[in-house]
Image (cartoon, rainbow, N blue to C red; front, side, top):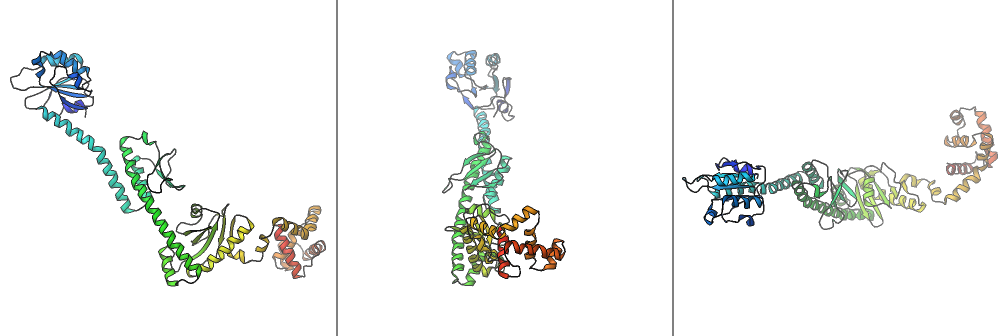
Length: 452
């Protein structure tokens, strides 16, 4: 409350005789009648007096000097009877010091002035609490509409007028501000969780600090709730996978549980078995809505589609795509595929159909040995192409890719069939293999695969 708001209150009917600094805030309203009032003041008070100090011989000039010297905001003089003379000496002393001075008529008791100040201060004091209650109500309403930390973050972002985010276990929820200032959340198991603000907490005004303080318990509660739900779902899903892989569980019960986990009975899904990647990395790799279950040493995923991005780290085995009731076969295929990848020590992913091809045997061998084998078969062809500018390797590749059909190969290479025969005869001479022999064709095919 400012001095002007108090002295201009129409209900008080105060006569302002001296207008000092009306913009000063009123810290308190205090009634003083002692001759040396300065020692009872701390500054910012509106001092009320009825002139009782006059009986001790104290002059108005001394009294006002004490009041002004103590930093009072204003001085009010109250008339106690209708025939009491106007306090001209007090007004003059206040004018000399530039201290706001007003006179209260008999009809306005001091208690009315104090009550007006207290009522104003009560409203001022209650405002932050009311705002905090409003913030609390807004967050409760948002959570009723949609559970999750995101609902609270959206409300807090609106209150701050800027985006806010939450970091938990290395994952950021919401729109991270730039720059961002971390405020740790407090809660069981939340040592790794922080609220990311667009401004340092100490730099926010009191109202916005209250909004942040209101939001933090909600955020902690939602994180704890989500983690508890996730842990329960993981245990539930792990049990279902154990049933599926054992082959002994009741299919109707398995189907029901899969539906509760978001896998409809008639859904077409595929299993992925992932090793060498963390849970968060796998969740980022697969589509939202996929069932992701962490097991000792691996993570099993049931997804509608395989990952769109091949990981640069870790090993991903992909089983067949089919009905949910054939999931056991898909999981077993995916595990065999990931085991094959691990044996090579090359990150990436391998599907069950690739695993079914005999050419996978090549990938399981030592790379240096494979290169040496390929060079032993094709070395002279490679050398001839390099020396003479021919393309015997390309000719052989086209011939085998077309199943040994001469005319199709010639058409593909845009050469006469006799030219093709001449080139392939040269291939046979340099490699010592006969293209009429199935065994030799296999050798050449495998050698070309290694060369590629």
